[in-house]
Length: 295
Image 1 (cartoon, rainbow, N blue to C red):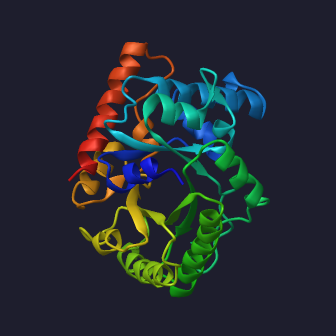
Image 2 (cartoon, rainbow, N blue to C red):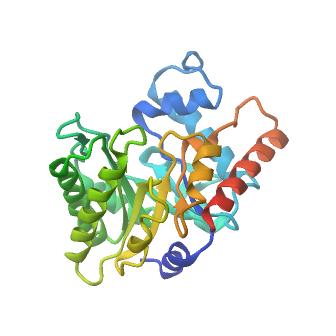
């Protein structure tokens, strides 16, 4: 475990950039960036284009450690290089930004009001590669659609079981049980979720450290007590489908909660922009998310 990186994540000012769209969400990410499916053929061309987009973001002068603590990558990005360095090494050595890896393989079908994680074949092998590539931590996303106590319990248990496996491999897990922002009983789901998270945290061995990535809660400062739990290095928030302006406005009401935005970060960027236009747009985006994260 890199102590300098842990200190930065635990106490640093800034937010975590999520550059981890993969599989089915990659075409959407490219489309948002102005690249239509007609411009590529097959997965290899698609992933090469999305790596170009992420490389452009990461190499931008706007993508700076003054505002950004960490960046979440997806497996294909971890295995590619930027200027001769593997992406995680480029992030840390050239930018001072802590690298994370998305390890999940997507969501299972909805059951008991939730979508659990699909099985992750050879997770141990992936974690071993992540350690070799100098990645600091991982993340995996489940989704809660309804305030179903049994479903929420199962989601949190699965997340923490995998989290313990990830910690044992030498990485810090980001536990991400997202509550659907459009859920009719979002507030109740958050109450059940927090209770289940505290149960799992209290059962962890003293040396285990996790991070939490949660939807921006309905009630202001609702997750403040989770931030003080000794096993929790940081609590970060996903944008969850809100546009950047609304996500920032909601996030700013929660003290200590920092962003880990994906779509909201890349909003407004286009492959047709000049470097000057691109950097100007990304600078505005990053600084607005940073301001919402440091209250």
